[in-house]
Image 1: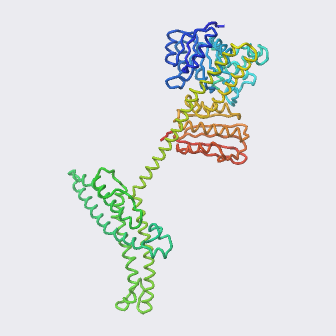
Image 2 (image 1 turned 90 degrees about the vertical axis):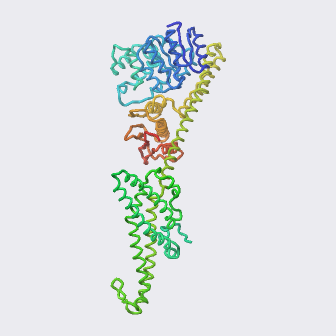
Image 3 (image 1 turned 60 degrees about the vertical axis):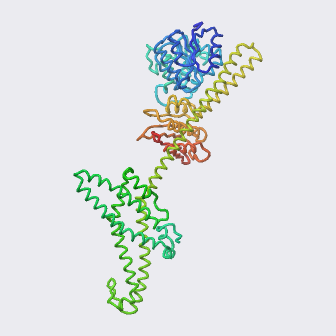
Length: 217
Length: 416
């Protein structure tokens, strides 16, 4: 476990910002700065060098995807910093944009509602700080419903797709085995099958690459 | 006074009514006056042209030639007045004083120049010839009973000698007069229509009015779009934020409250807040989907396809982002079509295609369902059709019984 995290938080709604600070501090993390826009976020990241950033997507001045742009900038300049994006949208286009940014530390995309599941949220945050990729289960569920006729994903078996979906949620092989009620060895076999079918380069983080391939369809 | 609204309607109306109306007389006046006016125009135009051509080397000629549109403009003013003879609501236009004051500041009306050339070169000789023939023939025939006694009479090879010939000639004259009344009215009506076509600025005004209406309809669609955007923003900044804050607070309370009924209730409350949030998210998406603004049509349609209960294949190839009203219209067409596919078509699969061709966006949604879709039966497509209409686009639904159903929209990619 990463233990006590040094976090910079960006969220433009004061109500939510305070709520988040409360949850994070109660969990023993240190919120070194809580700001209301992407510009301040970038300034504090450069200045305070946190190990984790938690940011909203939609912030001033344009209320569009400032949080995603900031995340990309942070990954380009400080790849070691883990980033957790909080969003109001289920659409996978946002997740794809986030995961398309430069490689680096852990990355996460969670719906804001998830924060209400405090333990789950804090657990996801820890995993992202640990370098894992975490995608909100609801987004993954929506992706799972997608059926495709072409591309490498079409060659996956149903079981492999299930495993891939759980990988996208950021679960370890052990957790996946538990969720699917199979042995961890069976999960490893499925994961290997996924890597082979998606023709992933063994030199990269294949777990992240598989999720990326999954999200891009 | 005649009851027919103009000479043309009079010709097509009851024959007796035409003959007793004023239209033949008005038409006669119209054609008779066109001869002197046409002749005068010919003289003035020819003189100006010759004078201008002769002096063009000393530059003065250019100014002289440039005066031609002013002259034809003045003729236009006169001719528009004269049109009142055959049309009760004559062509509208500037008055003589206005036209003179405006001088050369008004743009050259080539229609007016063309009318002047036509009148001076073709219309007036034709009018004069037709009038001479159509008036002299009945006149001679009507006078047949007397003329035959004083002189040898021969009409188109018919020798009128006897008294019977005189009576027959008179009768033929009456017939010829009726025929002349018809032909004169017809010619005047045709010429009036031609003059109106060339001289009436009403046409231009109508075209301008249509353009203005189109623009205001696009403004309306824009306003509609802006309003949706505002509502979405208000919901996002207001109710949605508060509900998220509520779930957070309840989530924290859940950790503080000791296990038992209290905690169960807090958890249930949090779940209810989450459901409200989810519902609100669906509503907001229906009003103004944020992913459309942030990532464009392809991403937004992919998301619709992901949500659809029927498997959907999406094939969208668009080089650039489209104007917001076009993107929104296309998105809602696909959204509505896919909703209908899920609800009514019993389809096993659907396909969405979108591409650009000749500056137009084409979107099709096809399913393999049972067809027979009635697009007028309370479907949201009706509203979308109106919206597309304003953008200069159109929407077609092809759904024969037994299927398949195809919804196809086309819309210019440039708005305005």
